[in-house]
Image (cartoon, rainbow, N blue to C red):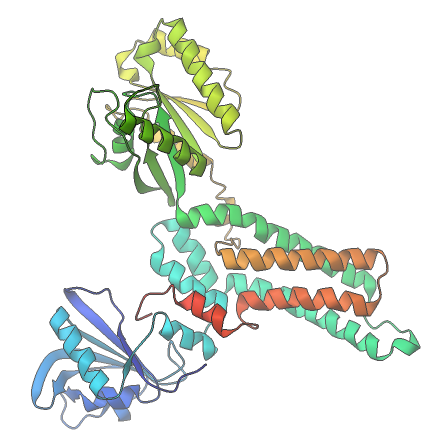
Length: 471
């Protein structure tokens, strides 16, 4: 799959900016760049320069100067792709970008496909497959937690853990395969006690990695939080307070929000995606009814539910308080697995005695949590943020443990776990080596899929198609 041609692409975001970087990679990258480069130092050739050096000059098309640039030279194998690489830092005009790229194309380059630079890095052994995938995750990371996970994976933390397990399993597999060659002598080269210990250790590690996906997936994609409640209780005001901007329309008219509004912020380094939903009530308004239907769809998709009600509306009103209690129980029964935070809004409008009475009324929420705040006055909003953050298991992040965020890795781990379980069961019932070897080979196959030791063109195409051009 390794192409020998030279590719070119814009490595920085498209559009105008102060600086743009145009990247070339391939055997002729330095030669092509040199054909278009005129150094400020007379008779200076890029072909004669040492690797990892930067040179000031101009990109010229015949006698026409296109731009003053800095050219960085990286010679194989000590480059990102493992090939000769040149990076041209030019001014960020879209016209200049296109003129330079078109010039390189006329000189013999071709336009890089999505992710082709990183694919070449993988094919040339500069990165394994899980590290290559982490590059895309790092580019798209928009909070501290997703950045930390991507960096840990790109540095090879996940790869080294899998590679170590695979190597140990491969050693035992070799011994068991060797036993098959001496089947008539009835000898055992693989110590079954040590092998059982290894299988137990692999199962323990696989369980930890598989369980981490539940946390890793929501951290990577943002934790969806549905804000629900009756109309006009302050859901949109709360969303604006959480985001610290006027994202949702706020009015005294009930039913203002008729569709869901979503936005994301980072709390404690974790991305949370807040969903302001239409107020839940009986209505004959067709449009509002559609919005309420979407509310329940968004609750289904959320990880956490925030139920909001007006504190001043139930002060001294036992019937209203009872009705709210019924609504809370409905949500708890309908979505028993979802954390529920019950929020009394507009506490700036009630007395201290009323606050104490509210706490007493909602003391026995059991699986739900109770918080009092004023979204409009920005009182207690930070307490809600702290409560939401407490639902995320960040212990693995603090301990720098491996967290799985990639669904492809998760799928391979599940399959490897299934085969390792079969190996364990086979050992316990004294299964013969030839039958054990079948399940061991399958487990090794799925380990190899993660790091790319076992791959195919379709798999690589699917992975790198999700990259941006120029990476």
